[in-house]
Image (cartoon, rainbow, N blue to C red; front, side, top):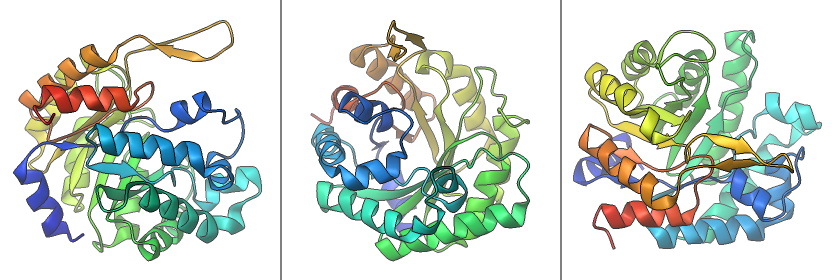
Length: 285
């Protein structure tokens, strides 16, 4: 997909993304503490079933589960030499799951290394992005970014070869976890050539209306909103339980489109039912 094709698609109507991946895979049996990317490669069926459910619920874009498949993050599991193998395999699983019914986004995220030299960060993202392009992804998404430096590195690594969406995780006041705020960040990323910018994860949508309204005032490119299903509480077994049901979530997401969001989906705690409800409130089903 070219950058021009992406912009044309967004202008046609609201784009519906997918929902959570990790929390749903844990429900399907993925153990805690494992390398998610390696586990999916060895156990593709839960991911395949999940992404087909998102497709059927109305997702137009699914995120390939390449989230932390960069050399820096994979080194935590002794897998830093498997960047190419893992990314190619993971994109293939997603493509086979949804066929041509959805766009497949190559997903990259924070390394969590706040003090890493920029050139080292750039090299890690370039290695992963080069493989994602080889694998045939339709676009890239840099998500759950904690500051502006890492999505800047993703944009530099992509070098305009493919559309790039960037979403950052924010506090309810718009501040970023690695310093700065979302309002300055979106202006920087738009200037660097991002094709869409916004927020993901963070809190529930009901806590983000003011942030979204103020982001919309700061940029001209498409705005993404992909929040959690409310704020979680931890149950007796140590698992997060999210408070917001699918219908309530979808109602809030419809309001997001009314105040400026162009691309919407769900993050932690959401499932295909949440996407189905979004499709319903947007009149897609």
